[in-house]
Amino acid sequence: MDVPFWVWALTVTAIVGMLAFDFVGHVRTPHAPSLRESAIWSAVYVGIAVVFGLLILWFYGADYGGQYFAGYITEKSLSVDNLFVFVLIMASFGVPRELQQKVLLFGITFALALRTVFILVGAAAIENFSWVFYLFGAILIYTAWIQARSGGHSHDEDYQENAVLRLTRRLLPTTTDYHSDRMTVRLDGKRYITPLAIALIAIGTADIIFAVDSIPAIFGLTQETFLVFTANAFSLLGLRQLFFLIDGLLDRLVYLAYGLAVILGFIGFKLVVHALHTNELPFINGGEHVTVIPEVPTAVSLAVILVTLVVTTVASLAKSRRDHGERADRGGTPAVADPTGDAQAPVPVDDARTEPAARN
Picture 1 (tube, rainbow, N blue to C red):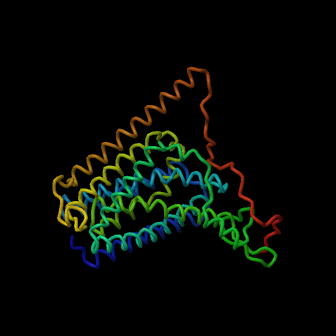
Picture 2: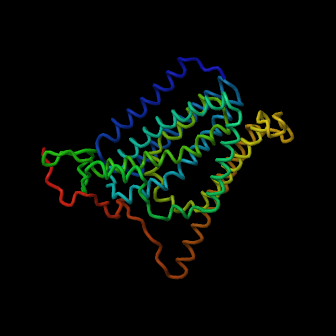
Picture 3: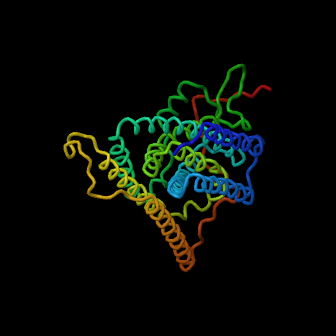
């Protein structure tokens, strides 16, 4: 796939422009987005991704177009699973509803920059070491097993701060209260970081873990760096709006973990088959290629991904509806989410026992 430099430049400029527009148009003034606003902008970003895929289909053919759509759908599905963790982080740090947009947008921007680095490293490794496909395949198969074993129950646990956050709290003084949408604040002549900055670091470090399965997954569907980058970028764009659109529905996707396990396991198997076809390891078949199992075509990959997601979603919603009906039959009252979406979890307390008044 020959992508001219000007196409790369135009694509990157458009993506940066959309992030800037998101900040200026939606996030700079803190507010809690309405369901209508979230739905409209989610549709806009999905529409942009689809139009881009159609352009790939038009200019580069059905095979590359299929690779892009398979990658985009897979990355978008994985990003929905990531939203479970984002919900836990927002609740754990008590991030006010009107400030959650800023945390998400900054986190998404960091994630895009981080994944770009991972993509470039991964592309270089694939170019020089064919055995990397074995490694990527093993990572995905292991992740699929973890997903299937958990069944999504890991999302029900409380968020546990990682070593990076604990080190940040130890090294930097942190306030106990939010100060509008500021990341830092000066109090009695001393600079503090706010819980909003801590939440942003939590989102950013969480995405490092997310990239461990998302980057190998996309390379299992296409080895074209341009398609890997754009599929990741367009799956992340609009994730902020998607968070507010479906955060009340996440608990209803009870079989999502199983669906993702099937998809990741399938892509992992596909990577291992590709690794065998390009095998150069001397202890496997004497360093010769293994072509007993044919490679999986792009059309089959796309079909497996779509069918798995449709079956998973329909089955999840059917079970949620059935459970709701059973609770109603027993005379129980289904739990109703807070319509404002404000998290009620206590704000983590740091070493600052008494917070002085902020100076203007």
